[in-house]
Length: 59
Image 1 (cartoon, rainbow, N blue to C red):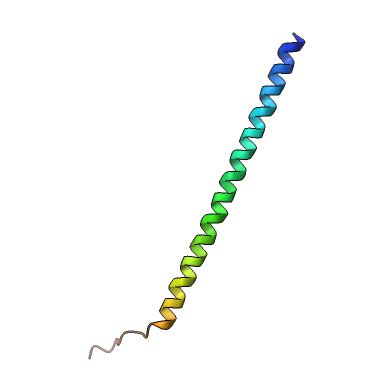
Image 2: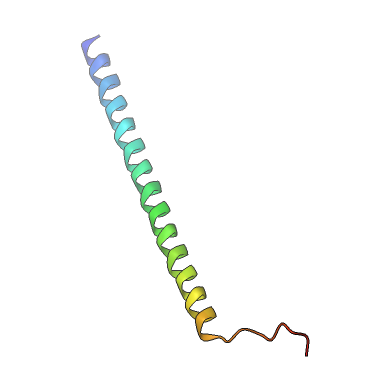
């Protein structure tokens, strides 16, 4: 019986470690995607500043 409890405890701890690593990887991916989005938006804003606005008067 003691051996079964040890195995169950070991498997539970291993499963929790795997879940923790999975969540950490998901968090890293979310930060990476946010950084990419920020850089892309900054590039678009910079391009908009370099490009003169189109004439909106209809002439």
